[in-house]
Image 1 (cartoon, rainbow, N blue to C red):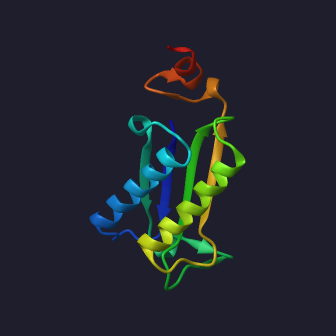
Image 2: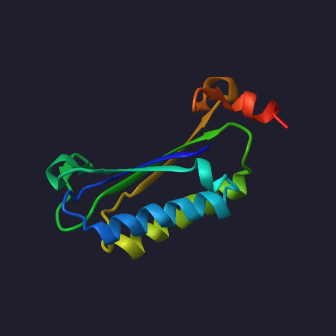
Length: 129
């Protein structure tokens, strides 16, 4: 059950671009990380460019982006995670255009007993037939 939060420094991002990002992030989670479609959540957090800094300076002339993904520990190989990170960066470039010098992707691996969905831990989901 991945939870994907993408912070984008453009509060005026049009609906079509938002939907393209959400669909692209979902598709990468499903196809590269082998996550279930019906439990993949994407939250777009649109902030003003004046609130997005790289190297201590506000991003100017580019759209800043940082993607954080929560997944269950031990469910993906190093290769899958590397392909996902590369795929997300490519998606951001294709969808948003010019990016600042740093556009990050972070995978947070959560223990199955500490991470859940609809009130059920990932550990319990694993135990179910």
